[in-house]
Length: 226
Image 1 (cartoon, rainbow, N blue to C red):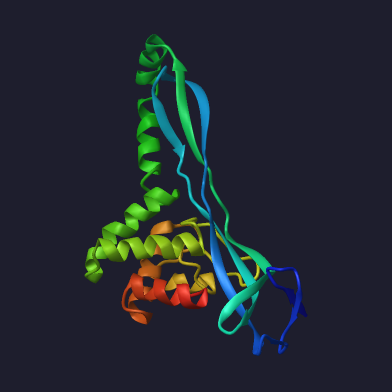
Image 2: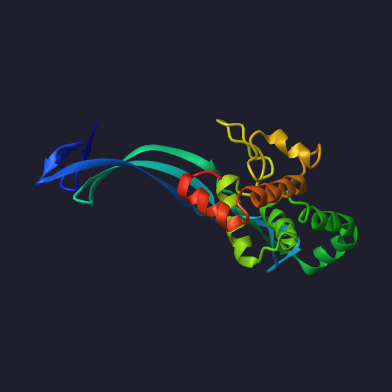
């Protein structure tokens, strides 16, 4: 296979350029696809009020390059493959268009639904609530906020904190991308549907294998997996 230099000239592996031998190597980079904010009007909120309906999650695409270097200096780069590691989830923000009378009259009727929404937001089925659950468990391992930051980055890459995420190639499943997913049954039988079970298993795995989330993240940065 040939690569092209910045000047457009073909460069073959092993070719001598200016007295130096062209070397070809592989480089893997994870590219972040930042989520966007989408606004959706609703008359269930008073005009001017806003509420986040869906938390945004950045997507990650893994790109493998074929890099040609001469004398230690990169002169050409060619994309070999692209693979979506985790899909981007855009943030959806509800924007109120209703009148104060409308929202007041619906408040008494919506008391139970408001309670349900508040409960749902903390059950781990959204990225934000899953992260909240994980953060509440960190202290039991002696990990501080810097370790939590590494954990967020790690599981953003693995699953986008989606408890239903499944790798179509390997079959890895859930927030921590357990392979196979059934390993998480060591915590509870509801591993396929319960984010808390997945997080509990994932933190235990990280602690046992790497000692800390930052060590696991460093390994992932180096190899593309953990």
